[in-house]
Length: 537
Image (cartoon, rainbow, N blue to C red; front, side, top):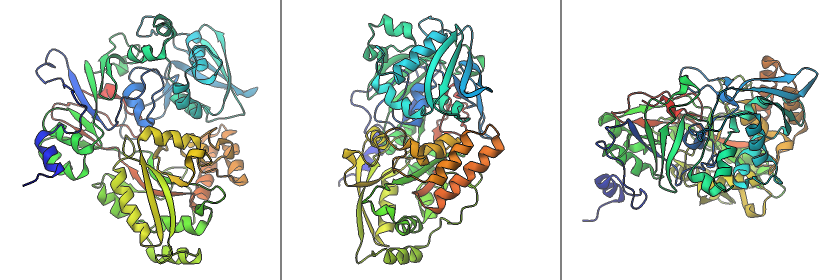
């Protein structure tokens, strides 16, 4: 008798974990409070100051080791968070010139290496990612954060604890960009011989955890920073071990066999078994959408509105939610209808296969004469959920209406690189869509960076090369207004245009499920893709 892969995984609990990995045992953890966290990534995200592998990576090697100037409230679960002071205690646009922002920095903050945090450190960090001529410039970090700071034009020190940041144009949404900019220690970089490779192994930030050990593609061990400046974010555990386990079944079995204490994104058909074993499923409303970005370049079939609408109408999103074990909800646009930016679009995303077939016929296609194309998709990773099964389900649904898509699966960071390069990049020849799921927590991240013509890749992540004068006008008006209600009204009109033009194929909003073992005493899951591991207890 031959055993199935699932049976073998169930027997071992550790199939697919890095070879040679020795996990800390519960007995070894008695002297200190240790939690072993199985993450869905094939490698530990960059530890030098700007994590790679997407927004989900910020919970692992971003907001643990480092802090941002402007922070996001991550310790509330019953409402969306808001902008709060981080390493900057205040930020204000000059009334005489709204392009100029003055940031007052927090006093008495030290990096893990003991060096003081100040304006010089902020300027040094901006130079490392924004100025290719700087001697300490790091392209790997720049690739992660430069697209997230599209408005930043210049920076200067005003005094020891004050910096001025100038935007290219008036941009009232600029503080949201600063959420993604993390600050590492110039002194540690100098101490380690000005080597970012050495810094990756011995990083120094101002965050609530220090990196004690890094084994690439295997694990990272984070220990509590007992000198952390913010008592409200002092870690409740002594050590968190991040364990790379990209296979969902492997992660789930490792939790069942006691080799991990919590995991993200479980194998969905194992959720009942995980619950029966006494583990807790934690999820929350998440401003995050799983979709396909469609190329609008000359030659792409998706320039035809009928094909874009047909692709959306052919998907039974309720079935996709069932495939995900109920841990998602149908997407009818970039944001959820409860968002102030949803508006009142006229095109309704629903399951209407007959209408999809009609639109395909009008465009000259159908099951007997299919429209054939190729998409770039991820094999997995934080935020990508059950990517391949979902892609396969949608592939079949599309085939039934006359769309035949070949999927080209790649590792998540490869997909992100392609996303930033844009549809016109040579590497995208023959590719007409990609499958990056993304955060929609603020107007910049939900709409501006995808649909303003100034954000066409590689400047931003307008991967599709979408250009529309009215959309640009609405976004420009929103970024020039400092009235929140007016911003919301204008962004709702942008969203209406995006939905009515069916610019993307929207599938589901996920709920970012985590499974907590019986020894995990507490955890606050925020309504964001940012999560705070200091809330683990």
